[in-house]
Image (cartoon, rainbow, N blue to C red; front, side):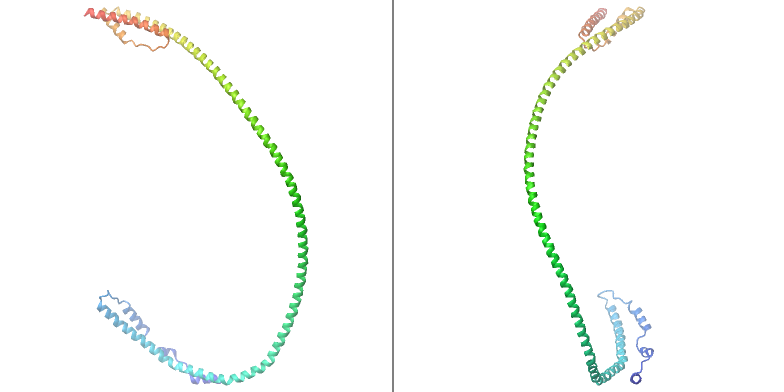
Length: 321
């Protein structure tokens, strides 16, 4: 309570509204400067007038900022002096109290340190006992592990011996099997070679038989083909002759009918017109295409007759002229 009264008598709290109101410029004045000065710009490096206006404005703003700093220092001076007085008094009182506290703490440690030492000793004894028990457990476990490892090592050694014996027996059997496989492989190779030789021999015989068969088949085919060609030629010749005979008979029959009709018509016309018409018909005749020898002979004989008639017709026309 006394300390509180002392503090109140030494320092009276400031009225923040009253004291802070001493700062200038006000928020409104700063807003006005912001609106006015932030709109200022220079047009370029040669804008002397603009540069002067900006400089003058900056000086005004700087003056206001310096005034604010001065007011800050003035308002804090009393508070700083009070703080230094408080620190000095607290240091003096602390220096008077510290020897008393140190004496009392020393007397207290006589008891507390001994209790702490006894507690640490008891804890150390318990820890040593625990460590001894743990070590005994570890030693017992290690002994069990050693016995187990020795047992495993003995079993492994016995297993290794057994494996070696098995491997030796296996190698022996493998050698016997390898020899047997080699003998079987040799026999198989010989059999394969013999089979290949026999296959080659059979292939050679089959090829020769095929060659003979193919040659005989070719000879027979040639004979049959020749006979077929001869028979076909003969059949074609007979068919052609029969066709020509039939066509000749049909043509003769048709020609006879036409001739009868022509004679009937010609009988009604003058002789000169009849002869001219006959000559034109002879000239318009087309030679048919035939392949048979007899047909050719027959055709040549007929055209020979037609030629003779044409010659007579020319002679008649010449004598008439």
